[in-house]
Length: 452
Image (tube, rainbow, N blue to C red):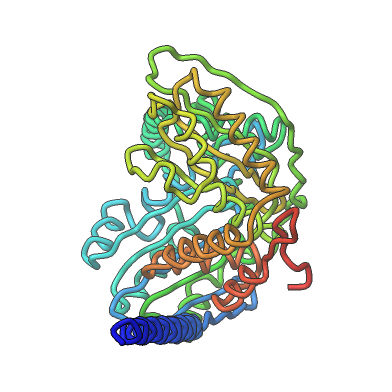
């Protein structure tokens, strides 16, 4: 009798555990469904990006997310790729001159006006874009747009200011030479795109900086700062109709045509450079292949592939428990010296029609061969044996990184300006999410549907 009761009790317990497990699975599935629905709804809740093209060709794009502050800027289709060997560095030089006074405002007046607004004015130059932007209260949007219009249309380009900035840029070049990562990527571009504009540095050679004058700067403005090559982008507490009105008033004087040859394709050249410096504690390595441009259908699959390769930093920890197989192999083969590879990161640098996809690593010079072997092994594995689970994880990593970057009006404004120049429109977040989701694994490679 006792034995029967025992068996009956065990059966009751087993059924109870099964019921609890079933309830837990149901609850988990319901929670996952609610999370997925909430995520999709959050993407749809993002304000629309409104776009207006003025009669002179200037594009005005904005996202009104409300709030008391905003970011507004000018994204110009110009950079070191549009230079020649003779004037390489002029775009960056001109960026420095933008805040040195205009025909309507002296440098002191410009600085005081920005400070009295409590605003922040900045600029940067890349290989394909030059950007001037301002962060301010939404109520000061008109003042910010007027200042941006003034500095690109009416710079004084005074001789004394040009000479002063010459020294500033030369000091900046010295500082950049101390930033190993910057030097490595400049070398990488000079090797990958030998004899082409993408192979030149953004700052330009010292010889050019020493001889650039007012004529070079004025000529560059006349050739590149034209309405069809400029996007006025804004995000935050911005009324689009008000922004369009400001653009019509402030930028009506911009040239409407430009006489520039079409962008020449930049030839990719496989090559290698080794620079030895025994005073450095680590070796810095950039290893890349030719990637694709912004609008290429393979852009998203390459980003997902980069997420599969992953990143690693020995000071953060994780080791063999990290999702990156490359990081696992590095830790597994480190033996008693886990500091052989200090860190690595995957990168996908894109331009209009080409790009560089690879890995940047900091490691002991005795570990270079082993690291490259492990990296190439992982690249081969990408072609033949990546699992569905890895692809799905990489998609989530990519989406998380992408959407977290859109935090704040400045990041959103930058995204609007860049996409308007590269795609001619701003891709909505639901569409980006869909494109990432349909990028799938076919058993031999990560590929995106061509008709998306």
